[in-house]
Amino acid sequence: MNSLRLPKKEAMFKLNRKGITNTILYLFILLLLLFSPDMITSIIYLETNVTEVSRGMYVVQFLVFYPLLIVFLILVGVSILAGAGLLMRKWLSRKLTYQQLWKLTAYASTLPLILSVVLKYLTVPDSVSALIFLSIFGYYMYRMITVYPKAPAKA
Image (cartoon, rainbow, N blue to C red):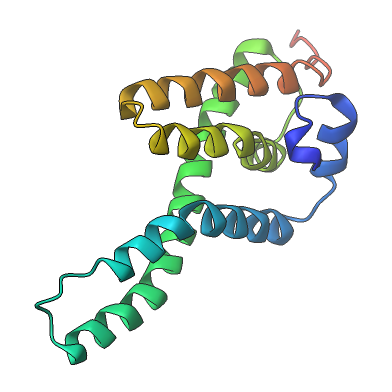
């Protein structure tokens, strides 16, 4: 619930107290829920000319490798976006560590991700959806980073 209340200061500080394991687990569950309709559709509408052995093997591979792909996408995607947050932090000259930015990035992506999935089902073009995602995410990160105090000026 706190991730949906971002960029409010109270929600941000509560989420920043969470451990990195809880953050990764939260993202995994969120993405699993968001992509379950695609997973189910993919299994249901598998080509009918595939033999039962192949279908069973496909389902097993799908159930094993799809979650691994989600974890990989979480780690890489959030790390890249946190890197952009690091640049924003430097530009705004704020006192934040990469670990704090990584967690903020993970939680700030909740609403844009949900919106992206909804837009996909409304057949909005991917480029428009990506632009909306980046705009909302950038706004959230800017608002959250500016809450932190400025870094002391170097003499």
